[in-house]
Image (cartoon, rainbow, N blue to C red; front, side):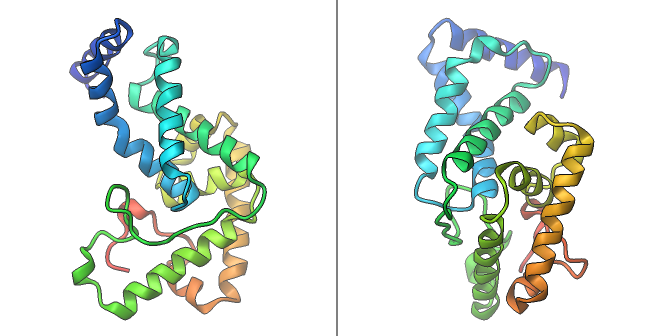
Length: 211
């Protein structure tokens, strides 16, 4: 993070805290995409996404005075989003209804436009996403967060541990156990296996090309 960006964050937060509506709208505009992406990759597409996005920013604005500028504003907001996702998973122990269809306002399963992806391959990618999230529904909230933030969102283990507020050792163990569960499911499911890399790992959505 550059010094200029850091100063810009501080000034924006100060404007928000003085009650300036334009500043609040600017903060939301800047960070809406990253919060939506984080929630979407952890939870998959589901009917509660708009409510979760609203809840995340409600918490951001309610606790904005708690940002001490020790971490970037983006990282601090990411932590809020992760807490919202964790609470949602903890409160919904039953299977989460997922929708693998691409959300035009959020992250996509593939970087290529729909028209450029052959129909059969596109359907295979959709089926793979659906089956992957069905497996993730079986994990504990902590394991699912660690796995999706690291394997799907493409964050490092250290960054994942920081976001979930856990030790490196515990985070590595959760990712390892979740990865083993996904690999075991893929071994019995050709469609899920095809969706994963040859190593059995999930390709981070941010780095995924045409499926």
